[in-house]
Image: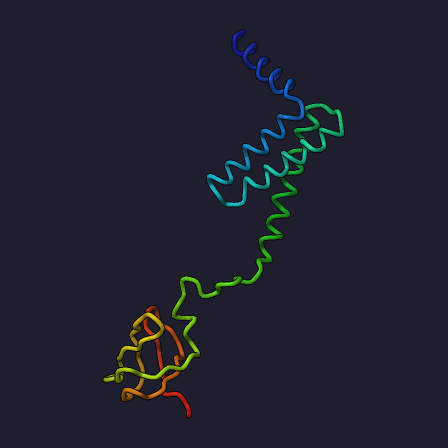
Length: 159
């Protein structure tokens, strides 16, 4: 039992001897954990630790007060992150990334092969797509109206 007390005392003395640096170290460790296992959760705890480190530069306070401030700052930062992430911005520059078929809906093309029995193929850019629609001869102009998985639904385009 006496050995455990001296080890615990040594850890507390080490933490106390680091002073302000313990919060900076904790913040950096938490931010590194966020880099290894992203999920934007440890980021907010790291920010709270760095915040307490900044406050500790200006205020000479007990470790208990620092710990309470860290807890409060953590709760506030996680709550703030929930509010910020709830109002996500639009999808950005590539809204159809990994949904190429959706990007084709609404476009018009000329058939290079006929649609027979409601099925055919259509070359678009560098890909060949399976299409469904009314039977039409090669050379007819079609408009893509929908996408079902990797199939495009087409109809004859209005002149």
